[in-house]
Image (spheres, rainbow, N blue to C red):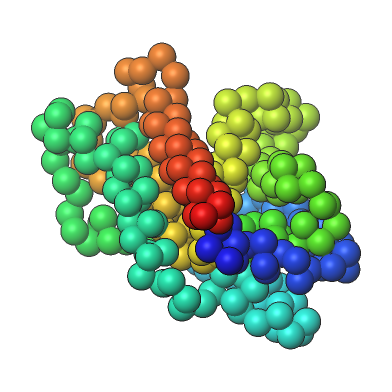
Length: 277
């Protein structure tokens, strides 16, 4: 098969209802973990710990607790790491795809273009590399869990492709909510009706479109990392205004979303033309 998402279809066809139920249980575990860690960071115990210890828990322990079950379950069920997107087939093409979209992301938000236009001063190299590595860790564990493990296995229980992706997107968005509830109480649920919630849902959808091409987790991690890195304002020392702050809507995310969707549509139509010959 040479279609745009041929490998994706081939892989998800292997997953059963049991895999789908395990994916839903995994999501439940992630929600419980998010609540537990949010309560911990708000507790008196956390206030008594050093900043370095808290950062270690947040930057190392949390990602490990989040992602470890994906590897364990995949291996125990003898599905292999390739079942969550770790393989070398078409690796060069997958990395190039991730690079192209990552460059677009890096140009937007508080990234390269606004910094150059506004005459920003780059952060020291050590600061940039540290910020990039932290962003990479945060993005990678989420992508491995939601794009590599949960989303493909949801197809084992939800046969509608669109519904399965929307459920996966909702899961991805909801896992970010507990911290708002813990910090702000019930008023924190207002995040559910926010543009941020829509961005989380939309983000999952475009990451899935990228993932589908080669069933590879690498371009997804690249894109997610550089979206976060560019949007967090860690590139310039100060004084650089984000593209989105001067636009009437979140133009950076819209541009990336449109670019990914147009690419996916083009790839899909090209594949159909090839199959028709």
